[in-house]
Structures are given as C-alpha cells and as structure tokens.
Image 1 (tube, rainbow, N blue to C red):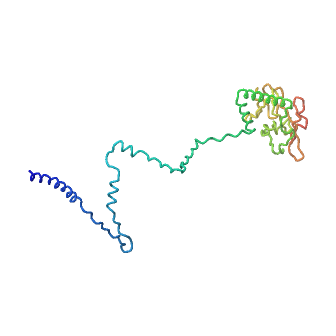
Image 2 (cartoon, rainbow, N blue to C red):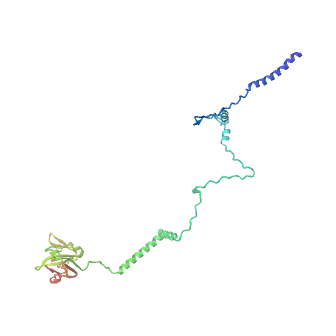
Image 3 (cartoon, helix red, strand yellow):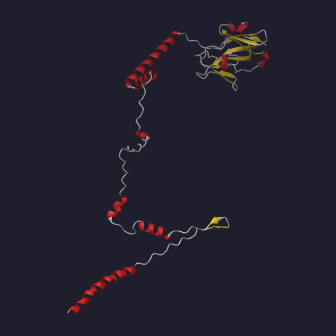
Length: 286
C-alpha cells in the first residue's frame, strides 16, 4: 500500500512542472535591436529617405479611433467637449473678451435739437399743408389780386402808339395808280398816287370805313377798296360809290420834308364832304 501511494504524490509535482516549462518555452527571447546607419548624401545634392520606425507606426495605429460602428456611449463621449482647464489655486481666471456688437445692435446716437430755422420751416410746412393753411393761403392770394387790380384801376391806360409824324419815302417811290399797303398794319394809311379833279397828287388815305369804322381791303383785281363788314366800296382816290358808307374816306396831312421825303401827320384829318380836300396840306402835287 505504501508503494502505490508514492507515485500518486509524484504526479502533481510533475504536472506543476509542466506549466512552468511550457511558459518558458512559449515566451521567445527578445531580439537584439539593430540600429541602421543614417543615409548618406548622394552626389552632394540630396539625402536618401529616412528609415521609419515600425514600432511607432504600430503604436499610432493601436491608439487610433475604433473603426466601424460605435455605441451611443462612445459617440456621446466623443461629442462631449473637453472641460476647460481649471486655474491653479491663487491664479485669476482668464475671461475671453466679449465679441464686438454688430451695427444694428449698437445704440443710435441721440438727435440734436432742431435749429430755429428748422422749426420755422416745419411750422410753414404744417401751415401750408393743412386745410386751415390752404384756406389762409387762398384768402391771402385773393386779397393780393384785388389789391393789384385796384392799383391798376387807379393808373390811366397808356397805349403805346406809333408817332403821329413819320416819313414814308420819296415821291418817286410811288408810281401812278399804285396803292401801297405796307403801311396799313403799322400806321393805318394807304399812300396812293392818283388823280383828283384832274390833278395828279399823292395822298395818304385813312384805313377806316366811314360807315361803322371797319377796315376795308384793297382789291387789286377790281381796283377798289371793299369793306368786309357791310360791303361799302370806294374808288382808288377814296370816293365812295357802293354800300352804306355815307361819305368818302378821310385823308391825313402830308407834305415834303426838308430831306425831300414824304412826311405824314396823323394828328390832322381832312374830309371831302366838307370841302377840305382842296387844302394843299392834304396832298403833294406830282
């Protein structure tokens, strides 16, 4: 019995020795680190690429983020901002500066008090723009117009008229039997070289009808003066022969001036029915 128990006791000792031996066999001996010499320059122009350490590459790969999907806890931990470092005891906390305010958030400067001139303009604008201002403006304008009308009424009417005496040219400028109409609009006369009672003379006929004061027209084709108002007709020398005109046309005074030109004087008139055409002051003999 004693012999059989001895081997049983020896088995555990042998079993305990096996793991130790296995551990010794499993762990390889560390390899000696071989240092590689640095690359030398090639032809004096550049250097060969440096030899990278594989241990540093493996360490960086192992410390990198876990590839593939991640849990919610890992995502929250990655998204959580790092807490700011607390200042050491006795040191003042460093506060970051406030950001600058945009233009629209800045307070607007207070407006200065308006000048007296601005107050007057504002008052006038309100006065004219309001209904009351319109009424006062209308009344003032009406009063001003009435004042101007009254002042105009107090002054006499003065009409600018051509001079009563004026020259019309030399006698040679008026051939026999010709009625000159260029002085009709400006001076109201017809210089005519005609015959009266067998005497050749130059006269200045008044361009006013003796019926009701209309202005006749000279009709060259019919050789007569014709009134457009009531049809009165006059010969070239001014004698009436048709229509309601009761008497011949009137003449103005005419004479030869010192320079030899014909001068007409409208301040004097001569009527044929009164026998005034025989006065040498109303014609120039040719």
